[in-house]
Image (cartoon, rainbow, N blue to C red; front, side):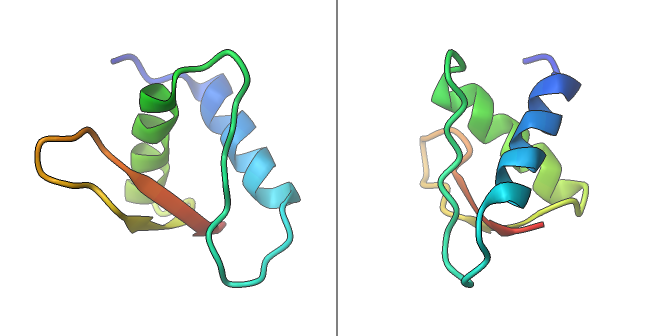
Length: 69
């Protein structure tokens, strides 16, 4: 899967716009498959740009739940 920096930026902006209450933040990008968004959340978490909970299960793709920038 290719890294899409425009998508990463859109995800960061969506997280920034949400109010911080310590809970999970739902990221929905219209027209982008969930697996692609999840992969980019993984990359952003690994880069230290977001804090996210790793909710990946065996046999599934990455599953990250962002909590804050």
